[in-house]
Each structure stands twice: as C-alpha cells, then as structure tokens.
Length: 224
Image (cartoon, rainbow, N blue to C red; front, side, top):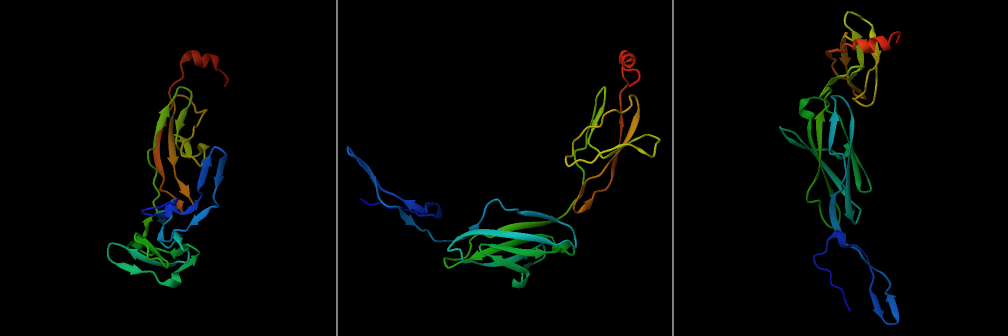
C-alpha cells in the first residue's frame, strides 16, 4: 500500500503513520517524516502599524517562516516621493527575524517599510508590510452622563465654576471612570488630557451641570 500526496504545501509537512487492522488487532508502522521545503513567508500576528513621533527611534521587527530557516533579508522604504533600499548596516538578523531601527526626521520619512527574506528555495513572493505613521494625541468620543446623585464623566480634572482649585483629579489607565460626591445644582468645568509614553495631548475643556436633588431627598440626606 502506498500514499500519494498531491499539490503539497508546507501544511502537509509532519509525521505520517500507516495503521492496519484485522480481527486480531491493529498495528502501526514507524512514523515517516515528510519535510516540505518552501521559500519564506510572512509570520502572522505581527505589529503592522507603528505610530512614531519625529526624532523618535522605533524598532521594527519582521518575522518569517521558512524551510530551510537559513535566510537573508532585504528592507525597502517607500513614501509618496520615492523608494529607497535600507542599508544592511541599519538592520540586524537573528534566525528568521530581522529588526530595523528607524527614526523619522520630517514628513517625508513617514511611509511604508517592506521586508523580504530569501533562502535556498527562493525569495519571498509577497513582502511583509509595515506602516510608519505620525503619532497623534487626540481625545475622541468624549461623553458625559447626568445622574441624580453623581455626574459620570470621562475626565482628569473637575473644577467648580469660578474656582481655580480642582474639586477632584483622577488618573486612570482606562478612559472611562466616574466622579461622585459632586454638589447638586452646580456648574463644573472639566479638563481632559490623554497621556502616554510619547507625551500629552492638547487639553480639552467642557462644562457639565449636576441636577438638583429632590426636596424629599434633601431632607433625608441632611448633614451629608
């Protein structure tokens, strides 16, 4: 008995075993390893977009799968004006991974880095593509929700109108959190900023108003 594997791809690589069964039982042949050679292809689950500020160094990693795994790499940078080969001294290779250090100096330095690998079977047919974009610091989808007992907001500092000292200052890794114990029927100024390891965004300011507590609740809550 023989097995014929047609249209072999790298997914067919592995160990194959033949089993025979009769009324006496089952027996298996020793495993036979099928080693499929192929040119490099991009590894999955890589970071394909990098937000980088001007004058900031970014390390871009390019990983491939290849058999045999002895590979060489080539990098190219493309923008709206030209395509440039990255000198070999600008990137390193460890196994099937290459890393390039890239620092945008002006607007033309934002674009696309392309990475190809090559082994004894051939050159990578489709490059790994990495987009280098300008880092942005913006606050999006700011919202406030008015409740009878508190004002639930996305913010960092809350000031009572007319006061220069914040009523509360909050810093959270999540952009959504609540501020409680604000005085009812008052106007507040909310100052918001987003901060990460690249710096702070521009300050965003808005006004919010707490609702008046019903009189029955004021009587039962006296002294709080």
